[in-house]
Image 1 (spheres, rainbow, N blue to C red):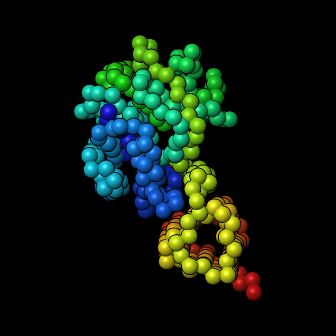
Image 2 (image 1 turned 90 degrees about the vertical axis):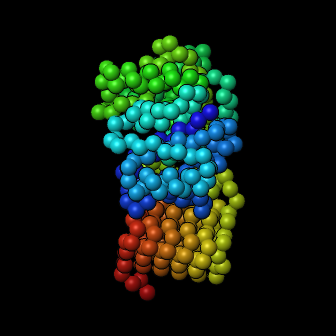
Image 3 (image 1 turned 135 degrees about the vertical axis):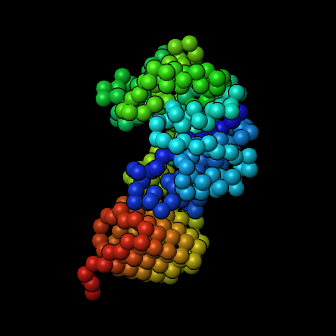
Amino acid sequence: MKLILPSAGKGTRLRPFSLYRPKSLLRIYSKTIIEHLFERMKKWANFEEIILVISNDEFGYKTYEFLKNLFHNTTYEIQEKALGLADAVYKGLKKVNEDVLIVLPDAFYDGEFTFDESFIAVKQVDDPRRFGVVSIKNGYIVDLEEKPDNPKTNLVICGIYYIEDSNKLKEAIETLYRRDIKTKGEYQLTDALKILIENYKIKALKIDEWQDCGKVETYLESMKYILSKNSSKILSNIKETKIFEPVFIGENCIIENSIIGQFVDISENCKIINSNIKNSIIMENTIIENSVIENSVIGSNVHIKNFNGEIIIGDFGSIFGADRT
């Protein structure tokens, strides 16, 4: 089995945090998103090679080098132009002739996976219009739509695809190219799969948990999900501070006279003084003083003082409110 990770997207929905780092290298609970994914994949599937599809830029190669350190037999293919997920997958399939597992690396997944037949992981959601939507009959997929305005069901594709015969998927994508079938200007994997199921059975595999990390809001929700699944970890000495678990506090932090939690992820080398923080992610080397912060994502090397509320602020930013003393 080969594992294909399409990772050529620019991460625009995660800006400003994806401006200075690849989106898959954003961290939660001290590990990158792609590291969390890799650990889960190793438990589920016996793959012999990872094929990472990347953009031809610094972020693409940085993601590749990071993943290769985790799994030596990692190779990469370049997607030069943003032509859609089907095109990215086709690049990854270039040298594949056996069964293939395709996983979108900007989400967290939980469930039971067996690889005895082709499947697509699906889950029921309240609003399926942002996703690929499937219709099923007797457990098998009979129709797919990409981000429909009026979805037929609320079962959506979660970003895990297992295809026993990778050559059949190649042929379906080649049909997209030949007929120039595009949805919203791109070659969509959903459209290729719609062609594939005309003569090929794909099971709908309902999974237990799926947390999309592709937007700032869902990145914050993913942090809460990961912390709820793990024990709190405090790697720094804290003084006169009340902790409401679960939390993660990285190394070399200075935290004094504060209230931290619930659901706070603080990376290394941060300084938090006289502050109350909950439901927030704080990246490395950030200073927060005399502030009350919740439902926020704060980048690295940020300085915040005398602030009260919710905030999304990228790396190297600063906010200085009026002194409240």
